[in-house]
Image: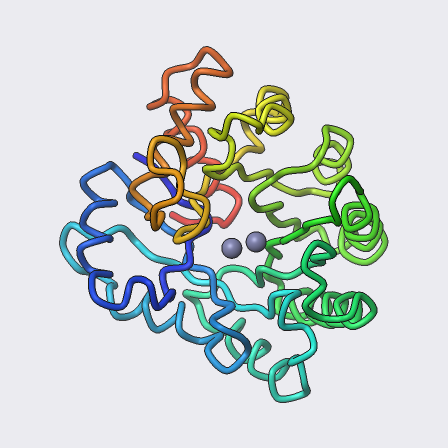
Length: 270
Ligand SMILES: [Zn+2]
Ligand SMILES: [Zn+2]
């Protein structure tokens, strides 16, 4: 049994065949997916929740949970209405986390000071609603700038809530993983762990305690080898489990079971 802890099922790239994609996932052993609710921006933040409801209880379909949040790319769009919408979505039982939120200094689509303010505002809302947060963090090339700022903010403004969260698509250094673990976070690895140049990610995945690890696709992005470059889909989280199994000398099915158990435990899912 596999759990994809991070997929953008609301992507328009699944417009025609979302049901078939979910059947593929089921056939690959995926039983749970967290559908990330950032939409194309705050206006479509609710789409992940809709997808969760549309597919609930369907045969041969994974159980779909949702998140809601404003991605750092769209931080400049986070007006009062957008933040109120986030607050309202976080009251829904299917919406189990706030995210993905954080800082992206690689693209800088929103000014950094705006990104920090909106990240902070969303942490406050998530704290009030008692929901964990899913973190997106991407520094500038050859820099740790976004990690430095994200981890300081998590340590100073989030760790004390005790709610924790997930560092999604981890690409940082071991020191960053360690600080996040200390702040109560799970570390999630994505398909880029299979890329030839991703040795630092594999090094981190070899060290993260197994009971703090999750796996994800970040679909439709970051398709793992051998499907690199194609539209990614939750079924291919199996390749992430394979890669981590190889690194840890553990069978892939045990990585699948362990990371699924971690997900259920972290989110208190029965
Ligand atoms: Zn992300
Ligand atoms: Zn994502």
